[in-house]
Image (cartoon, rainbow over all chains, first blue to last red):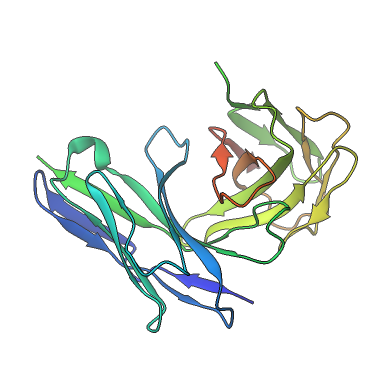
Length: 118
Length: 113
């Protein structure tokens, strides 16, 4: 079974600075998808960024980018120019590429709580 | 506005009582999910449903039951057999394609006294 590990329960960063959240995963599969989800204090989770394992290029969404190291099974999230609205719990998640027509069964990490200091 | 509505947001129950959490979506999504969130453990999948009248057990289905009689609705019953029911419950939905994006409700916090 696949597992996802986030080793940083909490992180903090000064507003406008850059922070990196770590994620490692364990799988024997070669084709899969990785995600970062954000859960702000309002509790509604939203997708931040997605990476397909077959793509070598790291995904980027505005101030959010990932460092995907397939051989190391590492998938970190970098947030540039941190803003107060970035404060949230961040979850790393894995999805196998098998059963692509079916339900999206994601495996989540434990989460990292990010605090932004003004 | 399209989205997922969970109710109630907060629920208190006595030990031994069954309780049902509601989840309704108007996104026309085929698949729906229930996750349980505990501090330090992330989200764990309880049940999921790909289509109406069909559902599958997730990783921690014991003590829970679901139904999917309508596309829009996927209620979760926490039964008295669930040994540690106090938790935050999240409902989600998705289309049945390989996007990986789940759309979440705001959650329901169940406290068993």
